[in-house]
Image (cartoon, rainbow over all chains, first blue to last red; front, side, top):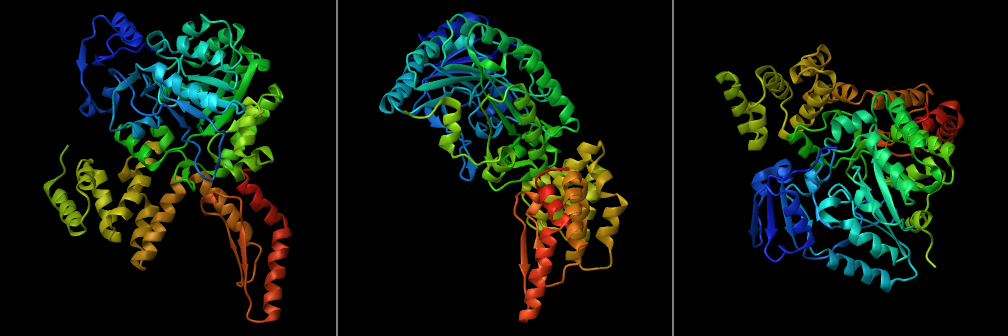
Length: 359
Length: 181
């Protein structure tokens, strides 16, 4: 894994004394720091250059959102995301942020984390009988910058006291030191995005290798935490069966299935805007030249027959490993669920299988 | 790399006449000469508008990247040259060029579609029975339309459709949609 190092640090006035700001200044003593009053204009750095502009700022507006994968017509897992930052130190070729954050570059870390927790707390208190699954890894890797953000220091004790929610920390890193300082908490799950080694090498620069991710998962599981895995995005590589079988073998060697909270599968999906952004940046040509066709939601995916074949194959491996591991497919219509699992659960049923049913 | 003045002017004239967006023109003029010329020849021979050209260009570029060749290497292949210069209407030639490019761009999907269509065609269904597959095989629903100008013709259509639906060919088409080899 490559360490993140910014070219410049921007600190919004009023955030200078935040824990994140202190950590950042300590970690990057030779990087120029500039205070600013909003708005901060960083468009001229572009998407990749913007990632090296580290912005520490208060987030205005809501932190908690429904996962945008919950698109009409697709079966959804009722996932909520709490955004504690925006943009990511990694630069995966297929990342939707290239489109989503194209006009607001800069790696932003929010300094008012306590307000985010208050917002989550309010929702959890108002619905004590519901079970929530909440992740922090939508707009930024959950753990890659944990040494700076110390998010685990805020989140793990917070969720330990709130049993009606499960926190998912989703990462492509091996940065688990901060987390391992805590005693295991049943409702904190650490999830790794897994992919074929060639995809990690060619399309996920700077991230931890497959072996590093699985070694971290092994440590986290041995420490007593539950882990989860996302085979997402699945890529229809010419040798996909061999490549993903190799990943699966390594997974089985590394962790025990009994403490795996869930496994998801999701095929590569590219909106027209994301395809355009990738081409403009000359990124991900292997992915762009795959046999992707537009679905009803306008996103391009591998054609359905191929997706079904890959899902069935991986789910069969998973079933042989341990049929009890909860599993789901991401952003697929009811017809694909039916042909893959032989049933079409409701969104609530999918969620209940992952975190338990409401009381 | 700059294009020869004559080609540059030809592209500019063509795109001005058809009100192409400046970004598209700029991209075109930024290509190397062989690619820019191949696109120009394709565009002029089929009188392509901006969106039509962009679709074919995108496919040609993606095929080129995957096959380790150039846009010109794709567009100058005999199948394309033949399709675009056939002695037929412009629309028919455009459809033919698209069909060839699509087959190269989506080889596995095209093969699956071709197999499914073959399974329908070989059944020798009467013209009053029409089998429709989901576009790009992105779906699990097959529609059959039966028509008839008399009760007897309608019954014959329905019986033929039912026979096909029950046949091994009908079963195989559904298997193709499900990705079962």
